[in-house]
Amino acid sequence: MTKRNPIISVQHVTYTYEEAAHPALEDVSLDIGEGEFVAVLGHNGSGKSTLAKLMNALYLPTEGKIFVRGMDTADDERLWDIRREAGMIFQNPDNQLVATVVREDVAFGLENIGVPHDEMVRRVDEALAAVRMTDFAESAPHLLSGGQKQRIAIAGILAMQPGCIIADEATAMLDPSGRREVLDTVRSLCREKGITVVWITHFMEEAAQADRVAVVSDGRIRLEGTPREVFSRVNEMRQMHLDVPPMAALAAELREAGMPLRADILTVEEMAEEVTRLCPSN
Image: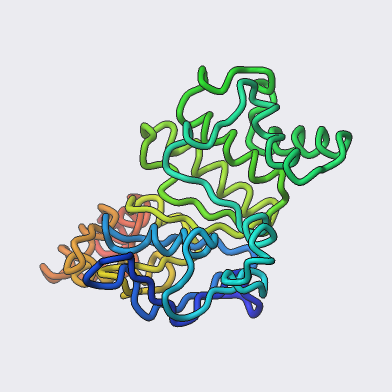
């Protein structure tokens, strides 16, 4: 459940791209609480990436308001403060790397805001340790794997000491191993350091690991709740051309066939437990 004081508050936001016939987002409201891991799920073109860019003030709402830690994203004078508070990870890690040495890349944002040298060194070391990339501090970023590059991008954001990380399809260009690596890193930061995470994705298995899921379709939030609540609504998800985790889909099919399984099964272990309960051995 959302915390009482949201770090990001999206209030009746509509956004229409120039010359577009229809809004990319229409009357969207969503609060992201302190320390939450919220997945925003949707198919390509649903509006979820537009929402991410609005939260980071890369776009400004056509209608409505977005507040980041109480700061209006439309306030030009607070733009840098907003982006420092809500750091953004993009799809392609190569587009975020600016230096020829990992340590220098992580320090880039700190140099831009004039952080003193000793403080900068401390923050860079802590950020690299947090993403388990200390051993690569003197490496060339272009020689790293996709997952390692994204972890360096995350370290650059962490060094800025944000309250929130917004990840816009951050694993979309990675192989399965790299995807796991990056998601595990961000989940650990949320759990251990209390950093709020907005995780934009079209991967069901990633959304299933969030505290809360908001499903975007045709520019609106159509479903919202815990992963168990959202993925138990299999028919509604499929009407939005979205799948659900395999065990949730299997549970729905078995219930339709008359097997009285509980509605919120997500994992193989939970399915095995339910089947054992319903069909105990003699």
